[in-house]
Length: 617
Picture 1 (cartoon, rainbow, N blue to C red):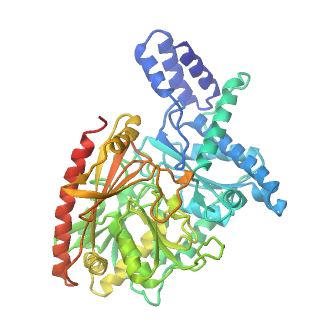
Picture 2 (spheres, rainbow, N blue to C red):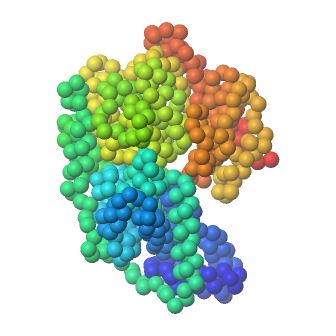
Picture 3 (spheres, rainbow, N blue to C red):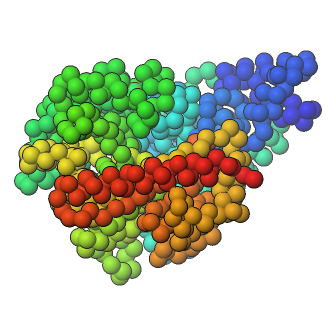
């Protein structure tokens, strides 16, 4: 306990935020006085440190090294700065033209933030640290979407990009995402495919080690205490990412449209920003694209870090779209669009005439519709990123391994290259020649040339183009899905989720499955098992960077089951997929196949619930 209290005292001395200092001081005083509850609270707050990984940081706001706060952000920024500087120095000695990695031209960072609690403070702290080190800093002038920041990494040819956001996490969370670009990215990944994308291993580990060095030095230097400031001001002398950049994003997004072959705009759209930062950019983009009837959900349009109408501001959560669906009924809308709070994801709902009700589409259904639309149209933009090594430059469609296999089947039927990647847009962004990529967790990128991450803003516009075209042809989105099934087969997906209290349990569940793998699932023999902690995806090279805790089971019945711990939440996800081949192209044939696959999906779901409920033995 003495060591713990000493650590807490040093942390307090380093903490620049009077709010979190005060919280710790109160707990420290109580623990010093023998209050066991306070001591237990401190033990929990100082039981480790937030792990910096490929997703950066994400956690609840609060004091101490296991929470998101200004000291954790300052140490993270300092470690990131040191890492980038050291790598650029190393590059200087190895590149043909050292001038490329010298001076401010190769010392540029772009920083964005959303509207969550303290997002602006964390961004300002980061900007101050890099600016003080002589870097050229470009900083949002107001809360904005993640795809706008991702775009700026490329626009500004920045070495580093930081986005402060916790995406669709609960209101008390915040996070810190890191992108690399410019000469730094090209030095670390000579094929150039990582420019503008989020980091992957081993870069995440190397940055984490550098952050740890900064922390050790902070604690060792007892002469240096923090300057306590209640208010974090925007640093002077930094450049602004502002209206001109938002206008530029809009102009480029509008270039994706095909007004000649897809001119229709006669649809009514209900849109919700989910209390996030996408509202103005999305509604203005839709209006500029010619969609004149866009009805925002007023209660959820303005950014609000408390998310008063959504306890869990994820459009996929049950009830999250209730207000939007109510508005859709009131206005006889054709389409509901929804972003998550940082607008990098997109959800959609359509009216199902057969069921006589509104239906929220799954990420896989949106991915199939967008994918076929892009296969029909062709690449929305030229200039996609290849390795430049003389390999194939044919355009490719991609999706993550936990997404449906349907788009791969459809791409093969159309003679278009298809890539399956590990989970995370950091991998989809690195697919050579990619023109469209998606993840089942409602992440879509319709413009990989300009945004090397998921982008719920431009995807909203292209999905609206798609729905308007279908309406003009007298086809519903549900009928379009049946058309895709008639061409490529029925693929139905679902999930089983196991929530845990202790994060250590995440690895225990998959470890137990490795120890006792299922020989059959729902009465069908497991014909193939793939362990992504030891094996690559089919046709790919296995590297340290691609080690991931995931298990894939294929069965004789054509089922696929994937089990993996979530990368951002305390739960284990089990992704299910069943298939059926329609007897013919008729609607009745597709309906019969869909019913068969749905029945099988229920059976597989029950079986996996039973298998996972056993837990570690």
